[in-house]
Image (cartoon, rainbow, N blue to C red):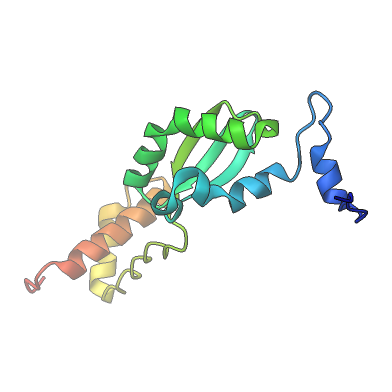
Length: 155
């Protein structure tokens, strides 16, 4: 059998070379993301993703608390698997964080209703003793919302 005389791709040649001490492989995080499902399993991979690498801690994003707890329970196993597949990352700990990707922000509360002139005068009188202007404005908004939510009692 004759040896192949085809050239070896540069990336393959470089990947085979050992890295100097203290140098991280810059492509390892991409490979970790690409192989995440193989590392954690399909079900967990649908709800988690590898995030930032902070020192020797891999931050894993999770869709919810249950998925975060699953990642936390598998922490030592994940560290071992990552160490086998991507030793240049030097991951010693996994930290799971709950992040709702694509979740809509909480709706803003509606603006307070505009009080009738008489009601505005009464509220201004009641709140005149509050010297802190931002606090007085917050109290006014609270009172206006409470008044709008209360049944009309004629006053």
